[in-house]
Length: 262
Image 1 (cartoon, one colour):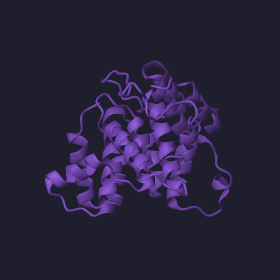
Image 2: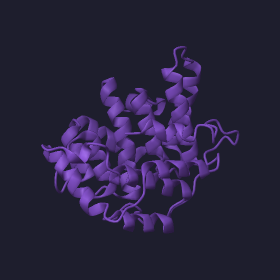
Image 3: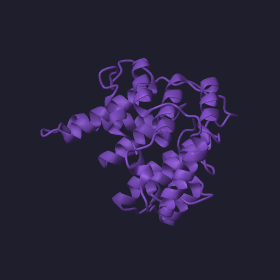
Image 4: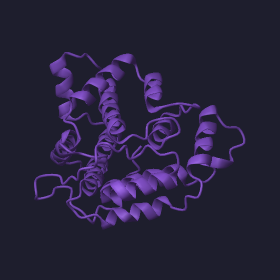
């Protein structure tokens, strides 16, 4: 889940509506699955060597979110099987990790205004503000939605698409491209199912292109934590198949495959 603090931390450092008209993007070496690592230290070495600055900071935030203890979370006397699995993952993956969420969030401020991650978090912040204000501006929300939608479908996009998809999901907004994809293919899905397809398809693309979705890997743990359904040996795909209806899973796969490749 997108922590709204991640969005607001850079609200004053970057404009969500860049005058350049295009989102900047860097190209990662396609043969490398950046997130296929069994420890935080190993993963940090990988992203330092191979990732763009934005991708490195984004991944560091995910690592910190996985490894930094939350008050009370790790001292529960009776835990569910899912919680035990998460703690087992942390015990092995986070050995020697010394970072913190707050420290990694601050690094977002160092990104240039045109960086796609800077733009994604800035758009998310503006979207949340536009929805939560007492006097909502529907036109502004529509504009930001279109910008986030363009980011979802952009050529050479990286994991900033996860930021965009999670922002839309939390705001309860289905992007125009997702709605149009379902309409053209004749799929009869409820609004709830279509929202699930939108987020799931982006997660699938990220797993395909960047890895980290195998057993005891970072994005798998992120997904199972959000779904509260972690189990030993789980992969991202096994979690999706467990929590989503087959129709949602199948359509998300097709949407992921049809979108412009990274």
